[in-house]
Length: 98
Image (cartoon, rainbow, N blue to C red):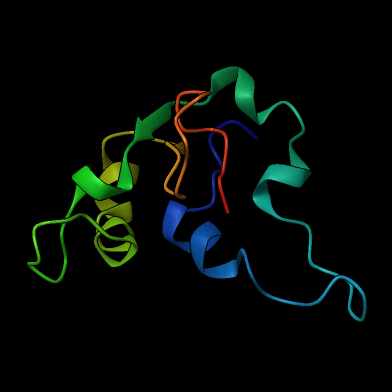
């Protein structure tokens, strides 16, 4: 199953579908292969500096979604987002203040 990966854009698009309390979700590409991480190419990025879709000088999620196909083309199979919530910075940004 290593060669059969769902495109990143499809995973992002389907991530919020369904309500687990009322419906059963279809198995995702990741749940069908519990060892997906063993041959994954994980790309870590900071949303604020990755790609700016609205030209305000700060990267945004729209810009990230626009570049998912490109990331998949270069072989990326998973994206690790650096923290993007307000933080007191006591834990490298992983501690959320609100």
